Length: 114
Image 1: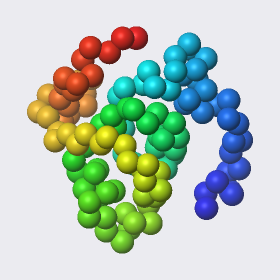
Image 2: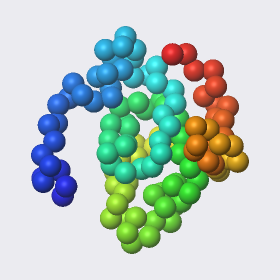
Image 3: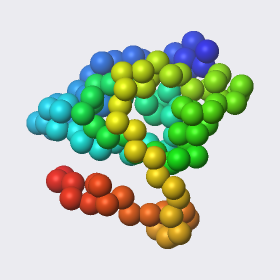
Image 4: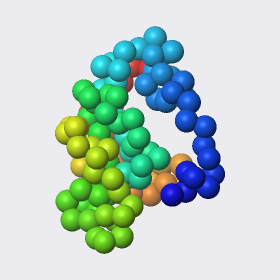
């Protein structure tokens, strides 16, 4: 595995849950998580936020969850979402934002408190 080559420091204080707690919030305060993809370096610790809706593209859900190809089965690790998160799939939009195409507003997250 790559981690054996690059030898990352696995410090619990660097996890998302610890960073959220340092900001004065509880893990249950996290209601929405927006993911670009389901690679393990993006979804590690997802289960630390069990009440959050997990937003991702329908295309990513297709390849990671519903009908993964042989390559995708090697790439994705279903154990990361085996706890049963509320996954919300989104079809790409037609807007452009900061030179990113396929953008659409996520109405579910429009009232977030920062």
